[in-house]
Image (cartoon, rainbow, N blue to C red; front, side, top):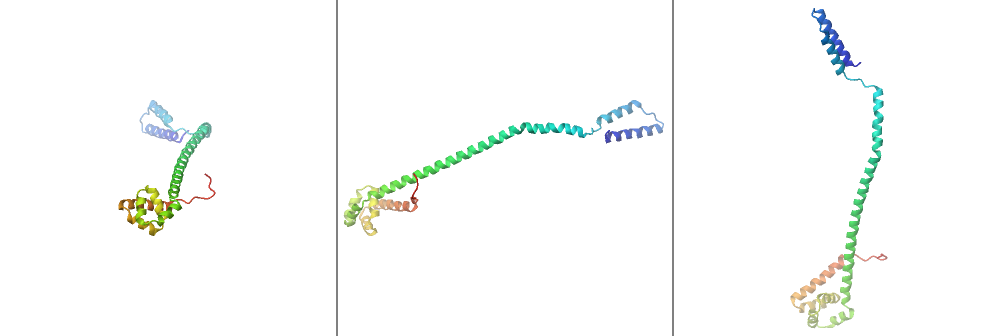
Length: 194
């Protein structure tokens, strides 16, 4: 029997005995109803047998969902790996684009420098500055700038001073951009596979 039930029965016995001792008649129906309520409302004692009977059900539940939980975990890991793979592919694509851009720039630079052949440079180096300025004024900007970069500084400045100011400024800008790209261009690596 539970402790609360015992206390309730003791209380009933004491109050019933006190009422009987006082001369008042106790109502047997009321006493029976009070005892029934006390039994009904008393907390149930949980035995070890009840606990052991319930525990395998919990273990069974965990065992039953273990495969589903593992599948969910593997699906999540697969999704994370796929996302990382997409990020790596995007970065590889960006690197390939940059590599192609540098290769195109290097090709353009080599073509630019090839336009100023050494023999042509020697001819312009021996010309008078005013005559060379007239010749270079009629050349395309890239060719004229390439030729001026191959000349020594004194000869190139004399030729530029004889040109129209806008044309000379354009050629000087093309020459300086070529020099700036030379400084920032990555050095080609030897023994590199294409």
